[in-house]
Amino acid sequence: MPAASIELKRFITAEPSAASRRPGLLARFVQSYQETRLRQAEREVAKYIEGRGGRMTDDLERRIERRFI
Image (cartoon, helix red, strand yellow):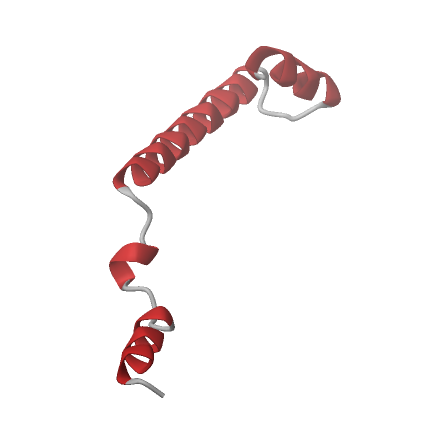
């Protein structure tokens, strides 16, 4: 087997580096933004539930769905 094909196989089958497995900057920013918005929404829903007696009922669940979704 020629030496060139041996070298080529080594690069093709090599493991990807740690940097290439990490999400890009934009993907990390979007993920961070989504997590922040999710936490904010959860806080708002919890505040809404507390303001309505703190007990989860079917009616309250429907109201939350209409208001926040």
